[in-house]
Length: 260
Image 1 (cartoon, rainbow, N blue to C red):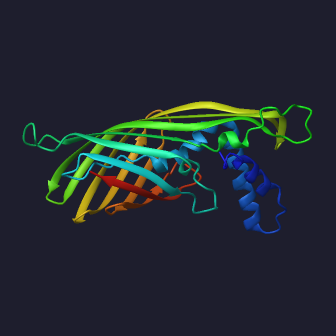
Image 2 (image 1 turned 60 degrees about the vertical axis):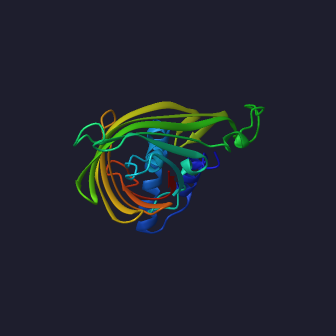
Image 3 (image 1 turned 180 degrees about the vertical axis):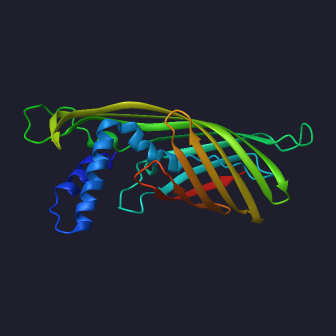
């Protein structure tokens, strides 16, 4: 994971001398994020995974969807989105709205997966504690999600949708020797995260292949709130995510998708 040095980058930002109030605020912000990463690595990284999780309904008349999360990140500071290295999401429509009986919502199943293929390139498995430099000896970061989404029309071009999503994320990082990070000796980051999220939203299809969606969610296990506004075209989605519980409150996203 080429972005696995996130803690190092943040630590470097804190160690830079600051002479203005803005610099002091940024140092405090970076310190907070390093502490959050050390105390709970999966929860910190899940803020990025949520950008690639797609739970909007399949457009009427389509049966299968494939989504690739191309770009995401932070507006406040230029941190990259770790899930853009390698990810894929798929959607399958189990039945269309009203087919079995009038008023029955459309039902979709969604699933996605991401993992950084560059993680092993940063590893130095033969590094020892006697080496002069601190090196990564192991690195494994990734996640996946599954969701069931129902949607029902309230007008010819307007649908309401709601769903339930289960997300999982793991992170394992090892160093060849302990490294001092703000007075704490750290040699490994490790952890697992599961989040169960209930979401609901509204979709407005204003022309052929184009739609606006607004979606909100609540994580039942970690009490995480989220909101998203997105514009979707035939192959492109531009979204804006809001995570009130995160220090990185505002996060944009760019997705590519295709429906059949």
